[in-house]
Amino acid sequence: MLKARVPKLIETARDLFGVDAVRGHKDGSVTVRSTYFYRMSRTTEGHVANVLKRMPNVEVIDSGDRYAIWPKESYFWVKVKRKEAEAVK
Image 1 (cartoon, rainbow, N blue to C red):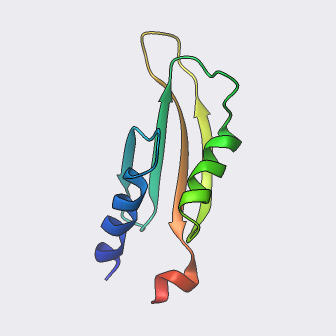
Image 2 (cartoon, rainbow, N blue to C red):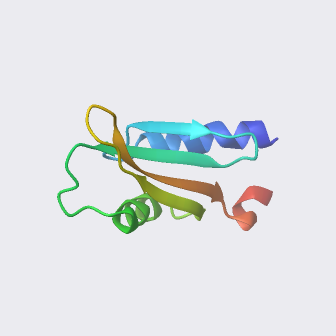
């Protein structure tokens, strides 16, 4: 039953503007990643707000900013999971 819900959450996350990678995990959570070359005043909190605005049925488990010196990728990431009330349905 959990396997059926994770792909739906992944599909929803892939439709977000500016998202480069979406990964599903065995525990039912999904990591949404957005890469950047220049931050241009963007923050982790802004990335989290963007995800929550478009996916209101999830709760944030963790988030962060992985900065790397070029040529490696820098990215914001947020790990989300369906809210318990939503997961029961």
